[in-house]
Image (cartoon, rainbow, N blue to C red; front, side):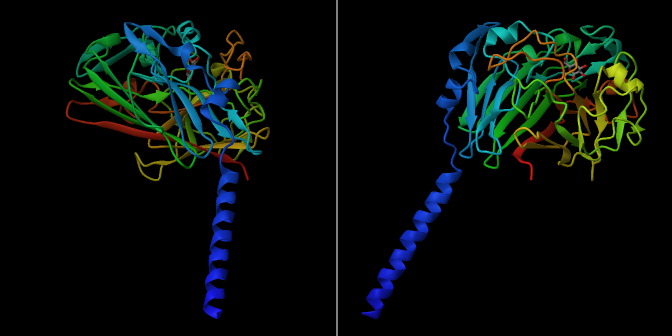
Length: 393
Ligand code: GLA
């Protein structure tokens, strides 16, 4: 009798425990799906991205996990079009800038919204560098300099795409020898992964058949208050960088590695982005706000380390950025001008988003004191960047 009672009691407790676990678990499940996010204009509609560009098929890919994160990426430029994470009340928020259709991307060649950038992220002075005694002249698309790969950088290429699972997208682009006047056939693979801890991981891999230079990054514009929210002024940012590379009036590094201490570029402690952005500091005037490469404090070169933490007091959404790269370009969206509207129909006005482009330093081929961006045949370039989301505590 006692044994039977025990068995019944144990069974009862097991059932109770199981249903309790189930309900706690289901409470954490998002109440939204890819379809509902498309209806709410938080993710783009796939039909608006079905196109052929340069004779190649363009489409949108949706990545998701079971924790409320969903990301839309198009193989046109490998662009992140939207990135949805739960806010502090569990509601979905799209925290990157993105356009509703491929046509919008094709008609904007200067913003690099969400794009993969190459061959060389940021500027090369006068579009010129010398490698093994030979001088290469690149296209000057940002006078007097070459910016983000030149005339047709990786942001405007159609990448080959493979989606091996719901949460992974693999993109490949083979850049022919001499493309944009860069030497060597460069084969680039970028893998986007949405993890179960609400992070977007970006892994880069590249090989070449001739010595060349490269600087790969992603140009996502974040607004942690939600895309279309008119300002990032109250977004709080911390950069794990004691130094930065000062620029001249054309945004080319002078070559100096200067301390941030005592300047409005000191984000070593969390600080609202808007607090000092209009200070009379010549570097901010050259950049029209923040548009600077920060030298990350690295425990060891190439180690995966925390680069930045940002959060919005509006949504409570916090983003941590980890990278193996030596630098990060903090760009405060100074050139956004309201002429383009995003997924939800709101204009992207000046300083309504920020970029944290993990990278090697701008113009490195012309600065021997900067970490090298040279890639030789037989070597494999790899790097990793993680944008991890949560709620600010
Ligand atoms: C980078 C540059 C900026 C600007 C943007 C794109 O972040 O540093 O100056 O060109 O790209 O608009």
